[in-house]
Image 1 (cartoon, rainbow, N blue to C red):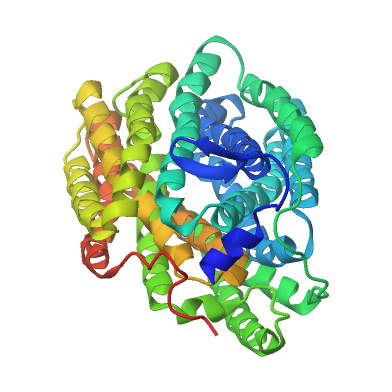
Image 2: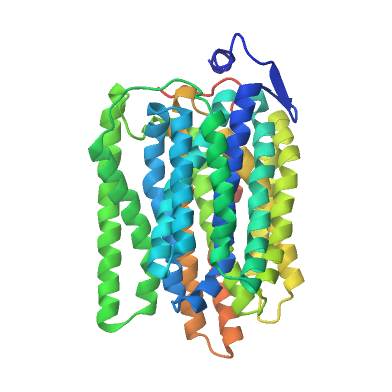
Length: 498
């Protein structure tokens, strides 16, 4: 079936296939993928500039660390609400219309952020940006799985990682330079013209891939999805408020946390029940039959654990570097630079290894390296060398690179082509919800332990960082077990998902 799908997507007449880094694609399809990669680069560049900027925004906007968390948690909450809908959107609308909508939202949000007069409007801008980003990433993954032959997907994913890793490599360093020399507004001022160029070029050159459906959207599913995923992520974000408040305000924070998580869990249960009913006639907003593939389900569990550890640790690290080690914003960005570059450069060989040997040869060492480095982070202190932290971060990035490419490829390749869009939506949703959980949990631990620890402010901050990294290290241990059981599907579509 996969071979037939690939053949059907190749025009009988048209430009000759283009060979890009060992992956053969028709020229038009190759151009669309690289345009989508360019748009993804802009979105990720925007996101990776924010981590380094948080300490500056806390001072410039006179906000607390827990308030500043909303600039990342609010972004991820919006992603968690919008991404489940993208499975339907990619089925219903053309590639071009979805691309234009996503980049228009992202560009509008960036403009609002650039002109924002204060913290509240900046949060609104981040929500608008996230609405576009949430659509873009599933669109990229679904398009790639649709047009790239099954036997070459690992190599293409490897090349995708080069482009996507450039943004995390450039973002923190660029952010540091701008923050040390100009204003935080320039973070958005640099991104905006790039986003507008991507929007203009894409509107002209992106064409539709695959077929669209005419199924009506189920409004009840959209509402349940918003309350479900949004309630869970919002509830997780309130953990920090509970830890930092007491008395009447503390009771209110506990009530807000309980109600949010309760509403979220109930709404998610109803959302799942609704999708099971609708998918019997192929009208589901998010088709849950993707979970009938055991390999896909295991991959999503692995991805959830990695996201908890990765997003949480990546959020705590800049706070540790700037508040404890007293590195400036530029130095913080440079600490993150080698790891991002290493992840990108490792992408192509990792993709080739996946295509030839499968998942275990990559996932097992990747999980071991990731867990080992996170445990080493639990020993950092106020006097730890910036160079030592940079080395740990670089090795951690290599461990993650060994894991992400095979997980992305193996999970989606386990599905039939008609489920790619839903699989991409589930993958993105798992990343965002688990990432929000990791950020909320580790920022809370970092703040609570730092506030209660004795000694100098640097020593207290170091204790908070060690406690937060301990959470990430514990979460990483099951990754080693998962690495053993996840497999590479056959080049044809894996087990049927009926």
